Image (cartoon, rainbow, N blue to C red; front, top):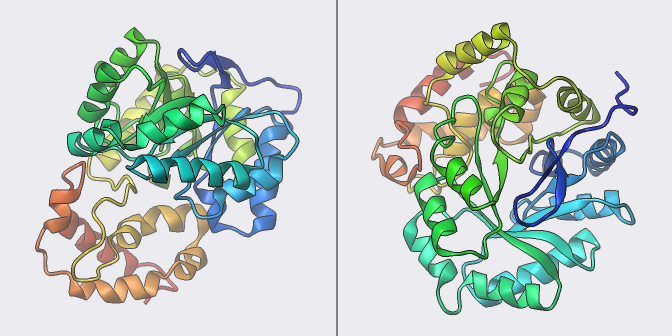
Length: 347
């Protein structure tokens, strides 16, 4: 379907004043496909009116691919640093500018701040925020934001640090418990909100409906990951349509929520590394990878090695203690292994 004549609505990204499309581009999946497909995907999003592109230093080649695809074009870009010290954060900004082929980055975010200890490191003298302040003073970045998975830490961050102009957080039909807490606090402070993982990391059976649900909520923009021009077209079709949910769609969203429950992996990776070498990430996320990209793609990622390595799990539950969502990871691994036994082409 051609949506070239339709226009994606825009919203103000909080006090940044940036006008961003309600549907943005999540930059994780393009690191996992060929460069040709990645560039075609990014350009298709831009052609269809997406103006907000999100990536991170941690996403291997994602910055470089977005920079190559959109060089010379007008768009708003956000990226992130995982550094916790000023020197590392500033160095990341310089690398991001080079990769994205930009003179200034619109939004630079501190990546994955998931507990109060990390927040303290970021905000302390010599912390990451200090490095981003320097980059801002030198006009290398225009605005500063924060990302994370723990709502309590993010609430504290925006309460004690007025320099955070945006918050990026997982938000979807299952992870909806931030509406009256974090999102409300951000609204009071005019802080832009960026919803990552709107389709639950590929776990939802009806991804377009999951995106529609998210766009209907009190957020600024949602950034589903897109790995192909076809996925871009499907998501944009949602954004340019009527985003109000019908009674039938609301019921379908509730069904998706009941099907998955709170026991889905959010792909944050904080459970790793496993002391016994178990690839928890690949084991728990194979279902979504198979659904979205096929068995062959899962095998290319190292599925068979991950499945074979699962026998090393001692059920020590160290991973459970590190999980921001307190998931019963050993139990989920057993369930995943049972599923993989039913998938043709997997050993």
